[in-house]
Amino acid sequence: MSSKTSELPNFTGTYANLLEKFAALMEKLWQEHLTSPTIAGNEKFYAWGNIDYAVVMSERKFDDVVDIKTKIGSLEIKKEADGKISCQIIEDKPLKKKDIIVKASNDPAEILEKTILALNHYYYSDVKE
Image (cartoon, rainbow, N blue to C red; front, top):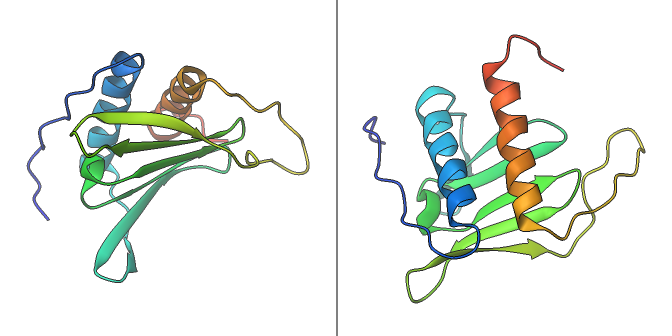
């Protein structure tokens, strides 16, 4: 695995700005907080986050599916056949913490924004929850 910073994907569409911020954060986490991989077949998968906001991606990063699972909903970021990277809501139950039910969001922007804030807080704040 290379220690060089890889080039960030070129996002387009409604959520391009948030996806760029998310990708920049994930690249920073990849460089500074790389976890031990889980191996499935010939692929390695990595996870970041906490009980409320979790991100899973393979070693191929945004060339493969990136899953975001949060207490408010889940999001899938993937490269389409035409090379464009899109995000969409995954219809499942959001994570819940100690049986506290949280209102689900159907807004990819809200999920991206809160995931970026939560991961920044978790990895780069002196306060850990």
